[in-house]
Figure (spheres, rainbow, N blue to C red):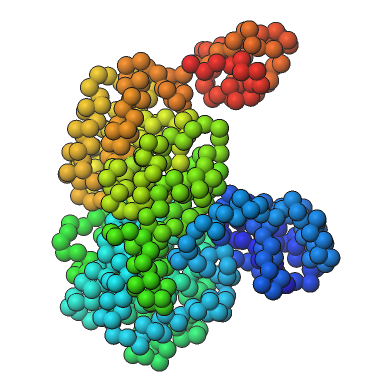
Length: 578
Protein backbone atom coordinates (compact mmCIF):
# COMPACT_ATOMS: atom_id res chain seq x y z
CA UNK A 1 0.00 0.00 0.00
CA UNK A 2 1.20 3.51 -0.85
CA UNK A 3 0.20 6.89 0.54
CA UNK A 4 0.99 9.76 -1.82
CA UNK A 5 0.68 13.36 -0.66
CA UNK A 6 0.35 16.23 -3.14
CA UNK A 7 3.24 18.59 -2.58
CA UNK A 8 3.16 21.19 -5.29
CA UNK A 9 3.38 24.76 -4.05
CA UNK A 10 -0.41 24.87 -3.59
CA UNK A 11 -0.43 21.70 -1.50
CA UNK A 12 2.48 22.80 0.68
CA UNK A 13 0.86 26.21 1.22
CA UNK A 14 -2.33 24.45 2.35
CA UNK A 15 -0.42 22.32 4.89
CA UNK A 16 0.56 19.15 2.99
CA UNK A 17 3.97 18.86 4.66
CA UNK A 18 2.36 18.94 8.10
CA UNK A 19 0.02 16.17 6.95
CA UNK A 20 2.97 14.09 5.75
CA UNK A 21 4.82 14.50 9.04
CA UNK A 22 1.68 13.56 11.00
CA UNK A 23 1.19 10.40 8.90
CA UNK A 24 4.84 9.39 9.39
CA UNK A 25 4.34 9.61 13.17
CA UNK A 26 1.47 7.11 12.90
CA UNK A 27 3.96 4.39 11.85
CA UNK A 28 1.61 3.06 9.19
CA UNK A 29 2.50 -0.13 7.31
CA UNK A 30 2.55 1.74 4.01
CA UNK A 31 5.09 3.69 1.97
CA UNK A 32 4.56 7.42 2.34
CA UNK A 33 5.76 9.49 -0.62
CA UNK A 34 5.04 12.76 -2.37
CA UNK A 35 3.83 13.90 -5.76
CA UNK A 36 3.27 17.23 -7.48
CA UNK A 37 0.07 19.13 -8.18
CA UNK A 38 -2.79 17.07 -9.64
CA UNK A 39 -4.48 20.36 -10.59
CA UNK A 40 -7.29 20.29 -8.00
CA UNK A 41 -5.81 23.23 -6.13
CA UNK A 42 -9.11 24.10 -4.46
CA UNK A 43 -9.12 20.72 -2.63
CA UNK A 44 -5.57 20.75 -1.26
CA UNK A 45 -4.07 19.13 0.76
CA UNK A 46 -4.77 15.92 -1.20
CA UNK A 47 -3.78 12.43 -0.03
CA UNK A 48 -4.00 9.48 -2.44
CA UNK A 49 -4.07 5.95 -1.01
CA UNK A 50 -3.09 3.24 -3.49
CA UNK A 51 -4.01 -0.35 -2.63
CA UNK A 52 -2.59 -2.13 -5.67
CA UNK A 53 -4.71 -0.70 -8.53
CA UNK A 54 -7.39 0.79 -6.28
CA UNK A 55 -7.18 4.52 -5.61
CA UNK A 56 -8.86 6.29 -2.71
CA UNK A 57 -8.49 10.06 -2.91
CA UNK A 58 -8.83 12.17 0.23
CA UNK A 59 -9.19 15.95 0.00
CA UNK A 60 -8.87 18.94 2.31
CA UNK A 61 -6.89 16.76 4.68
CA UNK A 62 -5.43 18.26 7.87
CA UNK A 63 -2.80 16.89 10.22
CA UNK A 64 -5.57 16.09 12.72
CA UNK A 65 -6.95 13.57 10.21
CA UNK A 66 -3.80 11.41 10.38
CA UNK A 67 -5.11 9.01 13.11
CA UNK A 68 -8.32 8.33 11.14
CA UNK A 69 -6.33 7.65 7.96
CA UNK A 70 -4.01 5.34 9.86
CA UNK A 71 -6.99 3.48 11.34
CA UNK A 72 -8.50 3.04 7.86
CA UNK A 73 -5.25 1.56 6.56
CA UNK A 74 -5.00 -0.83 9.52
CA UNK A 75 -8.63 -1.97 9.56
CA UNK A 76 -10.14 -1.06 6.20
CA UNK A 77 -12.98 0.73 8.00
CA UNK A 78 -14.11 3.24 5.35
CA UNK A 79 -16.34 5.13 7.80
CA UNK A 80 -13.21 6.54 9.41
CA UNK A 81 -12.44 8.62 6.31
CA UNK A 82 -15.80 9.02 4.57
CA UNK A 83 -15.85 12.74 5.30
CA UNK A 84 -12.53 13.15 3.46
CA UNK A 85 -13.17 11.10 0.31
CA UNK A 86 -13.47 13.20 -2.84
CA UNK A 87 -17.04 13.51 -4.11
CA UNK A 88 -18.18 12.25 -7.50
CA UNK A 89 -18.89 15.85 -8.47
CA UNK A 90 -15.34 16.97 -7.69
CA UNK A 91 -13.92 13.89 -9.45
CA UNK A 92 -15.43 15.26 -12.67
CA UNK A 93 -12.88 18.05 -12.53
CA UNK A 94 -10.26 15.56 -13.75
CA UNK A 95 -12.43 13.06 -15.62
CA UNK A 96 -13.58 15.73 -18.07
CA UNK A 97 -10.03 16.70 -19.03
CA UNK A 98 -7.61 15.30 -21.63
CA UNK A 99 -4.12 15.36 -20.18
CA UNK A 100 -0.94 15.36 -22.26
CA UNK A 101 1.32 18.09 -20.88
CA UNK A 102 -0.03 17.33 -17.38
CA UNK A 103 -0.21 13.54 -17.83
CA UNK A 104 2.22 12.74 -14.99
CA UNK A 105 1.44 15.69 -12.72
CA UNK A 106 0.10 14.49 -9.39
CA UNK A 107 0.84 10.88 -10.37
CA UNK A 108 4.61 10.39 -10.05
CA UNK A 109 7.16 11.53 -7.49
CA UNK A 110 8.97 14.42 -9.26
CA UNK A 111 12.09 13.82 -7.19
CA UNK A 112 12.64 10.21 -8.33
CA UNK A 113 13.72 9.68 -11.94
CA UNK A 114 12.81 5.99 -11.86
CA UNK A 115 9.13 6.85 -11.47
CA UNK A 116 9.28 8.96 -14.63
CA UNK A 117 11.07 6.16 -16.48
CA UNK A 118 8.34 3.70 -15.39
CA UNK A 119 5.87 5.96 -17.22
CA UNK A 120 7.80 5.48 -20.50
CA UNK A 121 10.05 8.37 -19.61
CA UNK A 122 12.93 9.05 -22.04
CA UNK A 123 11.64 6.46 -24.54
CA UNK A 124 10.71 9.34 -26.85
CA UNK A 125 14.28 10.67 -26.66
CA UNK A 126 15.68 7.25 -27.59
CA UNK A 127 13.20 7.09 -30.46
CA UNK A 128 14.12 10.57 -31.67
CA UNK A 129 17.84 9.77 -31.61
CA UNK A 130 17.12 6.94 -34.03
CA UNK A 131 15.72 9.46 -36.53
CA UNK A 132 17.30 12.31 -38.42
CA UNK A 133 16.71 15.80 -37.00
CA UNK A 134 14.64 16.58 -40.08
CA UNK A 135 12.38 13.60 -39.38
CA UNK A 136 11.82 14.82 -35.81
CA UNK A 137 10.90 18.29 -37.05
CA UNK A 138 8.54 16.74 -39.59
CA UNK A 139 6.67 14.90 -36.80
CA UNK A 140 6.30 18.16 -34.89
CA UNK A 141 5.06 19.80 -38.10
CA UNK A 142 2.48 17.05 -38.62
CA UNK A 143 1.28 17.49 -35.03
CA UNK A 144 0.45 21.15 -35.55
CA UNK A 145 1.99 22.01 -32.17
CA UNK A 146 2.04 25.78 -31.74
CA UNK A 147 3.92 27.72 -29.08
CA UNK A 148 1.96 27.65 -25.83
CA UNK A 149 3.55 30.82 -24.49
CA UNK A 150 0.93 33.04 -26.08
CA UNK A 151 1.91 33.84 -29.65
CA UNK A 152 0.83 30.45 -31.03
CA UNK A 153 3.65 30.39 -33.57
CA UNK A 154 4.26 26.97 -35.24
CA UNK A 155 6.90 25.12 -33.22
CA UNK A 156 8.29 23.21 -36.19
CA UNK A 157 8.93 26.46 -38.09
CA UNK A 158 11.06 27.90 -35.27
CA UNK A 159 12.96 24.64 -34.90
CA UNK A 160 13.56 24.42 -38.64
CA UNK A 161 14.78 28.02 -38.83
CA UNK A 162 17.31 27.41 -36.06
CA UNK A 163 18.30 24.08 -37.65
CA UNK A 164 19.05 25.75 -40.98
CA UNK A 165 20.96 28.70 -39.51
CA UNK A 166 24.70 28.65 -40.09
CA UNK A 167 27.02 27.98 -37.17
CA UNK A 168 28.15 25.08 -35.03
CA UNK A 169 27.24 26.67 -31.70
CA UNK A 170 23.47 26.82 -31.11
CA UNK A 171 21.29 27.20 -28.05
CA UNK A 172 17.90 25.80 -27.03
CA UNK A 173 16.17 27.94 -24.41
CA UNK A 174 13.09 27.24 -22.29
CA UNK A 175 11.09 30.31 -21.29
CA UNK A 176 9.79 29.53 -17.79
CA UNK A 177 9.44 33.21 -16.89
CA UNK A 178 5.73 32.88 -16.24
CA UNK A 179 4.60 36.38 -15.33
CA UNK A 180 0.85 36.68 -15.94
CA UNK A 181 -1.19 37.36 -12.77
CA UNK A 182 -3.23 34.24 -12.07
CA UNK A 183 -1.11 31.93 -14.25
CA UNK A 184 0.78 28.96 -12.78
CA UNK A 185 0.83 26.30 -15.51
CA UNK A 186 4.58 26.27 -16.11
CA UNK A 187 5.38 26.25 -12.40
CA UNK A 188 3.16 23.22 -11.88
CA UNK A 189 4.79 21.28 -14.74
CA UNK A 190 8.32 21.92 -13.48
CA UNK A 191 7.40 21.13 -9.87
CA UNK A 192 5.41 18.01 -10.76
CA UNK A 193 7.09 16.53 -13.85
CA UNK A 194 10.54 18.10 -14.44
CA UNK A 195 11.86 15.15 -16.48
CA UNK A 196 9.08 15.67 -19.04
CA UNK A 197 10.43 19.18 -19.61
CA UNK A 198 14.00 17.91 -19.83
CA UNK A 199 13.08 15.18 -22.32
CA UNK A 200 11.16 17.61 -24.52
CA UNK A 201 14.07 20.03 -24.48
CA UNK A 202 16.59 17.32 -25.34
CA UNK A 203 14.49 16.30 -28.34
CA UNK A 204 14.29 19.94 -29.41
CA UNK A 205 18.04 20.41 -28.95
CA UNK A 206 18.72 17.36 -31.09
CA UNK A 207 16.35 18.65 -33.77
CA UNK A 208 18.03 22.06 -34.10
CA UNK A 209 21.59 20.86 -33.49
CA UNK A 210 22.15 22.52 -30.12
CA UNK A 211 24.64 21.27 -27.55
CA UNK A 212 23.54 23.78 -24.94
CA UNK A 213 20.13 23.99 -23.26
CA UNK A 214 19.06 26.75 -20.88
CA UNK A 215 16.01 27.02 -18.61
CA UNK A 216 15.17 30.62 -17.74
CA UNK A 217 12.88 30.37 -14.72
CA UNK A 218 11.73 33.13 -12.39
CA UNK A 219 13.39 33.18 -8.98
CA UNK A 220 9.96 33.33 -7.29
CA UNK A 221 9.62 29.62 -8.11
CA UNK A 222 12.08 28.15 -5.57
CA UNK A 223 10.44 24.71 -5.41
CA UNK A 224 10.41 24.44 -9.21
CA UNK A 225 14.10 25.38 -9.36
CA UNK A 226 14.97 22.90 -6.60
CA UNK A 227 13.18 20.00 -8.29
CA UNK A 228 14.55 20.88 -11.72
CA UNK A 229 18.11 20.93 -10.36
CA UNK A 230 17.51 17.57 -8.71
CA UNK A 231 16.11 16.14 -11.96
CA UNK A 232 19.08 17.39 -13.97
CA UNK A 233 21.51 15.79 -11.51
CA UNK A 234 19.67 12.47 -11.71
CA UNK A 235 19.56 12.59 -15.51
CA UNK A 236 23.26 13.45 -15.65
CA UNK A 237 24.12 10.49 -13.40
CA UNK A 238 22.28 8.16 -15.77
CA UNK A 239 23.96 9.60 -18.86
CA UNK A 240 20.71 11.08 -20.16
CA UNK A 241 22.28 14.51 -20.42
CA UNK A 242 25.92 15.22 -21.13
CA UNK A 243 28.11 13.62 -23.77
CA UNK A 244 27.08 10.89 -26.22
CA UNK A 245 23.53 10.52 -24.88
CA UNK A 246 22.32 6.90 -25.07
CA UNK A 247 25.51 6.03 -26.98
CA UNK A 248 24.71 8.42 -29.83
CA UNK A 249 26.75 11.26 -31.32
CA UNK A 250 24.39 13.73 -29.67
CA UNK A 251 25.69 15.66 -26.66
CA UNK A 252 23.84 18.30 -24.69
CA UNK A 253 24.10 19.84 -21.25
CA UNK A 254 21.85 22.16 -19.26
CA UNK A 255 22.07 25.32 -17.19
CA UNK A 256 19.41 27.09 -15.12
CA UNK A 257 19.09 30.87 -15.00
CA UNK A 258 16.93 32.34 -12.23
CA UNK A 259 15.28 35.50 -13.56
CA UNK A 260 14.50 38.48 -11.36
CA UNK A 261 10.79 38.50 -12.23
CA UNK A 262 10.50 41.17 -14.91
CA UNK A 263 7.34 40.58 -16.95
CA UNK A 264 9.05 41.92 -20.08
CA UNK A 265 11.52 39.03 -19.94
CA UNK A 266 8.72 36.81 -21.17
CA UNK A 267 9.47 38.43 -24.56
CA UNK A 268 12.16 36.25 -26.11
CA UNK A 269 14.74 38.89 -27.01
CA UNK A 270 14.40 40.59 -23.60
CA UNK A 271 14.89 37.17 -22.04
CA UNK A 272 18.10 36.72 -24.07
CA UNK A 273 19.37 40.12 -22.95
CA UNK A 274 18.76 39.08 -19.33
CA UNK A 275 20.53 35.75 -19.91
CA UNK A 276 23.58 37.64 -21.11
CA UNK A 277 23.63 39.70 -17.92
CA UNK A 278 22.09 42.84 -19.34
CA UNK A 279 18.93 44.69 -18.39
CA UNK A 280 15.92 42.83 -19.81
CA UNK A 281 14.90 44.98 -22.78
CA UNK A 282 13.66 43.78 -26.19
CA UNK A 283 15.91 43.86 -29.23
CA UNK A 284 14.86 45.13 -32.61
CA UNK A 285 13.88 42.34 -34.99
CA UNK A 286 15.13 41.18 -37.45
CA UNK A 287 17.47 39.46 -36.89
CA UNK A 288 15.34 36.88 -35.11
CA UNK A 289 16.77 34.59 -32.39
CA UNK A 290 16.90 31.70 -34.87
CA UNK A 291 19.64 33.64 -36.68
CA UNK A 292 21.13 35.71 -33.86
CA UNK A 293 20.05 34.94 -30.32
CA UNK A 294 21.96 34.04 -27.14
CA UNK A 295 25.51 35.41 -27.50
CA UNK A 296 24.45 36.24 -31.08
CA UNK A 297 24.33 32.53 -31.89
CA UNK A 298 21.34 30.74 -33.49
CA UNK A 299 18.84 30.08 -30.70
CA UNK A 300 15.37 28.62 -30.28
CA UNK A 301 12.99 29.61 -27.48
CA UNK A 302 9.81 27.79 -26.46
CA UNK A 303 7.90 27.83 -23.19
CA UNK A 304 7.49 24.99 -20.68
CA UNK A 305 4.11 23.75 -21.87
CA UNK A 306 5.31 23.56 -25.48
CA UNK A 307 8.21 21.29 -24.50
CA UNK A 308 5.92 19.28 -22.19
CA UNK A 309 3.98 18.07 -25.26
CA UNK A 310 7.00 16.99 -27.31
CA UNK A 311 7.78 13.55 -25.82
CA UNK A 312 4.12 12.50 -26.06
CA UNK A 313 4.01 13.58 -29.71
CA UNK A 314 7.17 11.62 -30.59
CA UNK A 315 5.86 8.49 -28.83
CA UNK A 316 2.31 8.68 -30.19
CA UNK A 317 2.86 10.34 -33.56
CA UNK A 318 2.08 13.78 -34.89
CA UNK A 319 -1.24 12.56 -36.29
CA UNK A 320 -2.52 11.60 -32.81
CA UNK A 321 -1.89 15.12 -31.49
CA UNK A 322 -3.35 16.75 -34.61
CA UNK A 323 -6.50 14.62 -34.26
CA UNK A 324 -7.39 16.72 -31.21
CA UNK A 325 -8.43 20.34 -31.45
CA UNK A 326 -9.66 22.45 -34.36
CA UNK A 327 -8.47 23.03 -37.91
CA UNK A 328 -6.24 25.93 -36.95
CA UNK A 329 -5.44 24.98 -33.33
CA UNK A 330 -4.26 21.44 -32.70
CA UNK A 331 -3.85 19.41 -29.53
CA UNK A 332 -4.65 20.36 -25.96
CA UNK A 333 -4.14 23.52 -23.93
CA UNK A 334 -3.53 23.97 -20.20
CA UNK A 335 -5.36 26.74 -18.35
CA UNK A 336 -4.97 28.09 -14.83
CA UNK A 337 -8.57 28.74 -13.81
CA UNK A 338 -8.87 31.23 -10.95
CA UNK A 339 -11.20 33.90 -9.61
CA UNK A 340 -14.89 33.56 -8.72
CA UNK A 341 -15.14 29.91 -9.78
CA UNK A 342 -15.94 26.92 -7.56
CA UNK A 343 -13.18 24.62 -8.77
CA UNK A 344 -9.98 26.57 -9.28
CA UNK A 345 -6.86 24.88 -10.51
CA UNK A 346 -5.20 23.47 -13.63
CA UNK A 347 -7.34 22.34 -16.54
CA UNK A 348 -6.10 20.68 -19.75
CA UNK A 349 -8.63 20.32 -22.55
CA UNK A 350 -8.56 19.73 -26.31
CA UNK A 351 -8.75 22.91 -28.36
CA UNK A 352 -12.29 23.36 -29.61
CA UNK A 353 -14.01 23.17 -26.24
CA UNK A 354 -15.90 26.29 -25.21
CA UNK A 355 -15.42 28.72 -22.37
CA UNK A 356 -18.66 27.35 -20.91
CA UNK A 357 -17.14 23.83 -20.89
CA UNK A 358 -14.21 25.03 -18.78
CA UNK A 359 -15.92 27.51 -16.46
CA UNK A 360 -19.18 25.69 -15.79
CA UNK A 361 -18.74 22.02 -16.75
CA UNK A 362 -15.24 21.52 -15.34
CA UNK A 363 -14.92 24.56 -13.07
CA UNK A 364 -18.37 24.11 -11.52
CA UNK A 365 -19.59 27.65 -12.21
CA UNK A 366 -19.68 30.59 -9.83
CA UNK A 367 -18.71 30.03 -6.21
CA UNK A 368 -20.95 32.94 -5.24
CA UNK A 369 -24.67 33.30 -5.89
CA UNK A 370 -23.93 36.15 -8.29
CA UNK A 371 -24.16 35.64 -12.06
CA UNK A 372 -21.13 35.10 -14.28
CA UNK A 373 -20.03 38.42 -15.77
CA UNK A 374 -16.79 37.96 -17.72
CA UNK A 375 -13.53 36.06 -18.00
CA UNK A 376 -10.11 37.62 -18.52
CA UNK A 377 -8.10 35.56 -20.98
CA UNK A 378 -4.38 35.93 -21.58
CA UNK A 379 -3.49 38.03 -18.55
CA UNK A 380 -2.34 41.66 -18.98
CA UNK A 381 -1.86 41.00 -22.70
CA UNK A 382 -5.35 39.58 -23.10
CA UNK A 383 -8.86 40.85 -22.78
CA UNK A 384 -12.19 40.46 -21.02
CA UNK A 385 -14.78 38.24 -22.69
CA UNK A 386 -18.37 38.93 -21.53
CA UNK A 387 -21.03 36.46 -20.45
CA UNK A 388 -22.80 36.87 -23.80
CA UNK A 389 -19.81 35.14 -25.47
CA UNK A 390 -19.57 32.25 -23.00
CA UNK A 391 -19.95 29.75 -25.86
CA UNK A 392 -16.87 31.02 -27.68
CA UNK A 393 -14.70 28.15 -28.91
CA UNK A 394 -11.24 27.94 -27.37
CA UNK A 395 -8.80 28.27 -30.23
CA UNK A 396 -6.44 31.01 -31.38
CA UNK A 397 -8.72 32.41 -34.09
CA UNK A 398 -12.01 32.42 -32.14
CA UNK A 399 -10.51 34.00 -29.02
CA UNK A 400 -8.67 36.55 -31.14
CA UNK A 401 -11.97 37.56 -32.74
CA UNK A 402 -13.32 38.61 -29.32
CA UNK A 403 -10.40 40.98 -28.77
CA UNK A 404 -8.79 38.67 -26.20
CA UNK A 405 -5.97 36.16 -26.79
CA UNK A 406 -5.17 32.61 -25.72
CA UNK A 407 -2.01 33.82 -24.03
CA UNK A 408 -0.10 31.40 -21.88
CA UNK A 409 -3.35 30.14 -20.34
CA UNK A 410 -4.47 32.39 -17.51
CA UNK A 411 -8.25 32.40 -17.08
CA UNK A 412 -9.62 34.76 -14.40
CA UNK A 413 -13.37 34.32 -13.84
CA UNK A 414 -15.45 37.27 -12.65
CA UNK A 415 -18.99 37.65 -11.33
CA UNK A 416 -21.20 40.74 -11.20
CA UNK A 417 -19.37 42.14 -8.17
CA UNK A 418 -16.35 42.92 -10.36
CA UNK A 419 -15.96 46.44 -11.74
CA UNK A 420 -14.70 46.18 -15.30
CA UNK A 421 -13.16 49.65 -15.23
CA UNK A 422 -11.33 48.60 -12.09
CA UNK A 423 -10.22 45.39 -13.79
CA UNK A 424 -8.79 47.35 -16.71
CA UNK A 425 -7.01 49.63 -14.22
CA UNK A 426 -5.54 46.63 -12.41
CA UNK A 427 -3.94 45.25 -15.57
CA UNK A 428 -2.78 48.69 -16.77
CA UNK A 429 -1.15 49.27 -13.39
CA UNK A 430 0.71 45.99 -13.89
CA UNK A 431 1.88 46.66 -17.45
CA UNK A 432 2.83 50.27 -16.73
CA UNK A 433 5.05 49.13 -13.86
CA UNK A 434 6.51 46.26 -15.90
CA UNK A 435 7.31 48.36 -18.98
CA UNK A 436 11.07 48.29 -19.59
CA UNK A 437 10.92 51.91 -20.75
CA UNK A 438 12.80 51.39 -24.02
CA UNK A 439 10.06 52.78 -26.28
CA UNK A 440 8.05 55.95 -25.67
CA UNK A 441 4.70 54.50 -26.67
CA UNK A 442 4.77 51.88 -23.94
CA UNK A 443 6.68 53.86 -21.30
CA UNK A 444 4.55 57.01 -21.52
CA UNK A 445 1.37 55.70 -23.14
CA UNK A 446 0.55 53.07 -20.52
CA UNK A 447 1.20 55.61 -17.78
CA UNK A 448 -1.19 58.15 -19.33
CA UNK A 449 -3.89 55.49 -19.75
CA UNK A 450 -3.45 54.39 -16.14
CA UNK A 451 -3.82 57.97 -14.93
CA UNK A 452 -7.08 58.31 -16.86
CA UNK A 453 -8.46 55.07 -15.45
CA UNK A 454 -7.51 56.15 -11.93
CA UNK A 455 -9.40 59.43 -12.44
CA UNK A 456 -12.45 57.61 -13.77
CA UNK A 457 -12.61 55.17 -10.84
CA UNK A 458 -12.35 58.10 -8.42
CA UNK A 459 -15.32 59.84 -10.00
CA UNK A 460 -13.15 62.46 -11.71
CA UNK A 461 -13.72 61.25 -15.27
CA UNK A 462 -14.63 63.74 -17.99
CA UNK A 463 -16.61 63.68 -21.23
CA UNK A 464 -14.32 62.48 -24.00
CA UNK A 465 -12.20 60.27 -21.73
CA UNK A 466 -13.46 57.06 -23.35
CA UNK A 467 -12.65 58.30 -26.84
CA UNK A 468 -9.23 59.50 -25.71
CA UNK A 469 -8.53 56.13 -24.11
CA UNK A 470 -9.37 54.36 -27.36
CA UNK A 471 -7.13 56.73 -29.31
CA UNK A 472 -4.25 56.07 -26.93
CA UNK A 473 -4.82 52.31 -27.14
CA UNK A 474 -4.46 52.19 -30.90
CA UNK A 475 -1.45 54.53 -30.87
CA UNK A 476 0.34 52.27 -28.38
CA UNK A 477 -0.56 49.09 -30.27
CA UNK A 478 0.82 50.57 -33.49
CA UNK A 479 3.94 52.14 -32.03
CA UNK A 480 5.24 49.91 -29.23
CA UNK A 481 8.44 47.96 -29.82
CA UNK A 482 7.52 44.57 -28.37
CA UNK A 483 4.56 42.39 -27.47
CA UNK A 484 4.22 43.83 -23.96
CA UNK A 485 3.42 47.32 -25.24
CA UNK A 486 1.50 46.15 -28.30
CA UNK A 487 -0.91 44.09 -26.21
CA UNK A 488 -1.08 46.27 -23.07
CA UNK A 489 -4.19 48.12 -24.34
CA UNK A 490 -6.19 44.89 -24.81
CA UNK A 491 -7.87 44.88 -21.34
CA UNK A 492 -8.93 48.51 -21.86
CA UNK A 493 -10.19 48.00 -25.42
CA UNK A 494 -12.23 44.90 -24.55
CA UNK A 495 -13.79 46.40 -21.43
CA UNK A 496 -14.77 49.52 -23.40
CA UNK A 497 -16.13 47.32 -26.20
CA UNK A 498 -18.28 45.08 -24.00
CA UNK A 499 -18.86 47.22 -20.87
CA UNK A 500 -18.97 50.78 -22.19
CA UNK A 501 -22.02 51.45 -20.02
CA UNK A 502 -19.88 50.96 -16.90
CA UNK A 503 -17.38 53.56 -18.11
CA UNK A 504 -20.23 55.96 -18.81
CA UNK A 505 -21.76 55.36 -15.36
CA UNK A 506 -18.43 56.18 -13.73
CA UNK A 507 -17.97 59.32 -15.82
CA UNK A 508 -21.52 60.72 -16.12
CA UNK A 509 -23.29 59.45 -13.02
CA UNK A 510 -20.22 59.17 -10.77
CA UNK A 511 -21.41 55.68 -9.83
CA UNK A 512 -19.76 52.24 -9.90
CA UNK A 513 -22.48 49.77 -10.96
CA UNK A 514 -20.55 46.88 -9.39
CA UNK A 515 -20.15 48.77 -6.12
CA UNK A 516 -16.42 48.09 -6.08
CA UNK A 517 -14.80 51.52 -6.54
CA UNK A 518 -14.58 52.82 -2.98
CA UNK A 519 -14.48 56.50 -3.98
CA UNK A 520 -17.86 56.12 -5.68
CA UNK A 521 -19.77 54.30 -2.96
CA UNK A 522 -21.17 55.35 0.39
CA UNK A 523 -22.39 53.18 3.26
CA UNK A 524 -25.39 54.02 5.42
CA UNK A 525 -27.70 52.14 7.78
CA UNK A 526 -31.43 51.71 7.21
CA UNK A 527 -32.89 52.53 10.61
CA UNK A 528 -36.04 50.51 9.90
CA UNK A 529 -34.05 47.33 9.37
CA UNK A 530 -31.31 47.80 11.96
CA UNK A 531 -31.85 45.64 15.08
CA UNK A 532 -29.06 47.21 17.09
CA UNK A 533 -27.12 43.95 17.33
CA UNK A 534 -23.83 45.96 17.33
CA UNK A 535 -22.15 43.45 14.98
CA UNK A 536 -21.31 46.17 12.45
CA UNK A 537 -19.85 48.48 15.13
CA UNK A 538 -17.74 45.68 16.61
CA UNK A 539 -16.28 44.87 13.20
CA UNK A 540 -15.61 48.43 12.03
CA UNK A 541 -11.81 48.90 12.02
CA UNK A 542 -12.01 52.69 12.48
CA UNK A 543 -14.91 52.96 14.96
CA UNK A 544 -17.03 54.89 12.47
CA UNK A 545 -20.30 53.25 13.64
CA UNK A 546 -22.11 54.30 16.78
CA UNK A 547 -25.37 53.31 18.46
CA UNK A 548 -26.80 51.63 21.52
CA UNK A 549 -27.74 47.98 21.87
CA UNK A 550 -31.14 47.27 20.28
CA UNK A 551 -31.19 50.78 18.82
CA UNK A 552 -30.54 51.80 15.17
CA UNK A 553 -26.88 52.51 14.46
CA UNK A 554 -25.33 55.32 12.41
CA UNK A 555 -22.23 55.49 10.19
CA UNK A 556 -20.01 58.57 10.40
CA UNK A 557 -19.21 59.09 6.71
CA UNK A 558 -16.23 61.31 7.55
CA UNK A 559 -14.57 58.48 9.46
CA UNK A 560 -15.71 55.64 7.16
CA UNK A 561 -12.88 54.17 5.05
CA UNK A 562 -15.37 52.23 2.89
CA UNK A 563 -13.83 48.85 3.64
CA UNK A 564 -17.25 47.18 3.38
CA UNK A 565 -16.84 45.15 6.56
CA UNK A 566 -20.16 46.37 7.99
CA UNK A 567 -21.95 45.48 4.76
CA UNK A 568 -20.58 41.94 4.75
CA UNK A 569 -21.28 41.12 8.42
CA UNK A 570 -24.81 42.58 8.70
CA UNK A 571 -27.36 39.76 9.03
CA UNK A 572 -30.43 41.95 8.51
CA UNK A 573 -29.56 43.73 5.24
CA UNK A 574 -29.61 46.97 7.18
CA UNK A 575 -26.33 48.32 5.79
CA UNK A 576 -26.94 50.02 2.45
CA UNK A 577 -24.25 50.46 -0.22
CA UNK A 578 -24.98 53.22 -2.72
